[in-house]
Each structure stands twice: as C-alpha cells, then as structure tokens.
Length: 239
Image 1 (cartoon, helix red, strand yellow):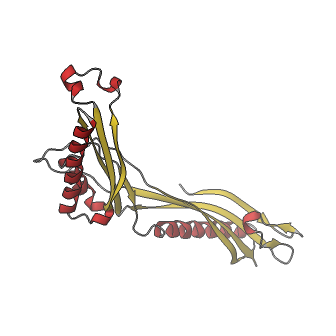
Image 2: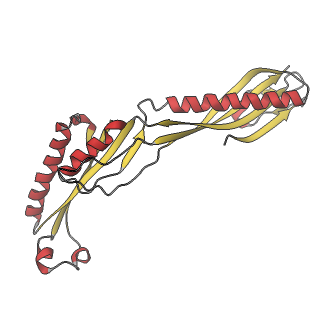
Image 3: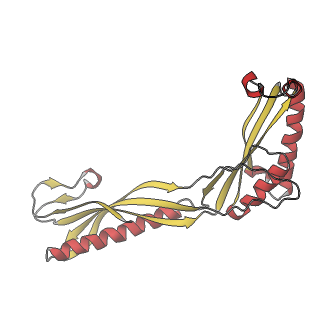
C-alpha cells in the first residue's frame, strides 16, 4: 500500500518557512504552495547472487586438521573455477584453526572424540548471476563445502530500483497535490522543490542447510524479489 506520511497546505502566511528539508522555499502571500510527503515502492527480481560457502573439518591434532582442511579448501575453490566462476569473484570471508571445545564432542565415542581434537573452518563469498546461484552452491557443496547455503540477493545496477521508487513516489505526490488543489478550487502549478529520502533495497536472505551427493541434482533456487522504498518531499506552487 502507498503511504502518505504527511500532507500540508500553506496559503497566505507571511514569514512561515517550509520544513527543514525544503528551507530554500519560503511560503508567503506571493508564494503560495502545497507541500506533500509521499512514500512508494517498487519490486524487481534480483539479478545478482552472493553465495556464502564454507566448510568445517577436523583432525586429531592441529597439523592433521590443517592438512585435511587444506585439501578440502583447494578442492572447493577448484570446483568453483571449473564450474565457470571467475577467480576474482571468489573472496575469502573467514578461516581459522582452533581446538574443539570439549562440550561439542562430549556425546561422541572416545574414538570419535580423538579424531576431533582440532577443527578448521573456512568460508568464502561467491558473486555470480542470480540464475547461476544453484549451480554455484551445488559445485561447492559437492566439493566438500558442508557449511554453505546463505545467499544475498542484489542488483547489478543498485541505483535503478531507487530511482524508480523515487519517481513513483513523486508521481503519487503530484496526484495528491492535484487533489488538494482541486478541493480548494485553485490550480496546481510547477514543482518548486523535491528531495528523496531513500532507505534502500531490502533483499530477503534465506539460509539453507545444503547437503548434496555427487549424483544429486542442484537445489531448486530461484532469485528473490527485492522491494525498494523511497520517500519524496515535494513542494508545488499554487497558481
């Protein structure tokens, strides 16, 4: 729903200033105006996906854990490259070699605990086309990325949705101003001032527990629809 947060009419008031966001426009008997604040939104399907991939590996000691982690780490990156992902879009996010806290393995058998004394954790972000998100995640998981699944959705042209939302809000502001002018039996004039308060897009992030086998099809992943909202302050002259 379109929301009009405020609509004010100022007529024949000497020395009265428009609110702070429009201080350059003064309201007086020689400058009659209608000021409107309107909010509107647009939605569009994301065309960029940032896929978060990573793994957790273990070993009986630090050296063994690191060796195991190194093997998985390089296999994941190679699998991503082999799937057509450019190397520069694969960016490291986190990596650590740490002792495993006892409470995390207390329910395991003694033999299992012995093999999980140290852990290696590593993660990356992979930026790709939205339609390629499933293929990217699938390649990483099948190479050993057992801590993966979150996808951030965005746009190649990050300013286009903002501009569209602002233009839509301005059209709504003009329509509201015209209705007010008609009710007062006056004619709406030119736009004197406009500003845009832009909160930005709100991508919806989904986390998934990604598990895959070599002979399993990629997960069914569809790009998200992103909502972008804009608030416009507009001042129109009254003729």
